[in-house]
Image 1 (cartoon, rainbow, N blue to C red):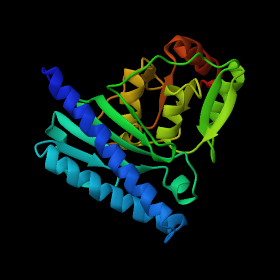
Image 2 (image 1 turned 90 degrees about the horizontal axis):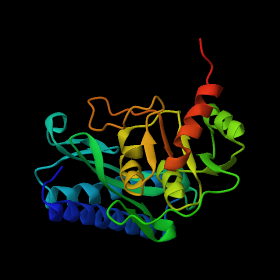
Image 3 (image 1 turned 180 degrees about the horizontal axis):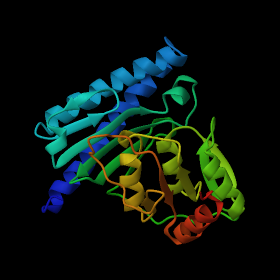
Image 4 (image 1 turned 90 degrees about the vertical axis):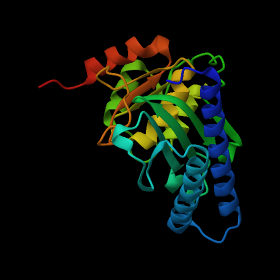
Length: 254
């Protein structure tokens, strides 16, 4: 990690600024009502990615970039500083005119998602790793965010074991920020993702004091040669043992 606290602050401010600019572009594009559905999603992905890459190359020319929407920028495999971005997380939700989509901008330092910003443009907010705030009280009953179209059977089983209420939602960023913002308590994912889907959400959630780990308990590591990162648990820290125990009891063993 950078030894200079000001350098870390500058990176965090840059991440938030870039996420906000990309989010404003996406809202403007959708508001023009010239496109809809898949065509709108594709145009949004391309345009937001172009803006993010241009800003990062201008402001951090020596850093590598991993994006969902383009080839790697820089020597990513050997880089200590790698920006991991998803220009439009929740393309389907965006194209359908929903609110549960996001823009992810994260900086991985030596494989750790250390800095991040998740813009929720339809809600007019950017949640930042450098501006953590106390978490609201946990729900009673507990609330678990799941995919609105294909809830993972593992998550559903754990929710049933805990007596938790399912909260269907779109993008990964929207789900993770629901836990950060106190709208949910648990986000358990087992259906396959990539680093750009969760790097910024994990950076933000970790900064807010949430538990973030793979389902086997290992830490979340980034900038791997293979960017797939298929499972994780993000939840309130005081619930981690409870959720992990429920997973153990509900997971079939051979």
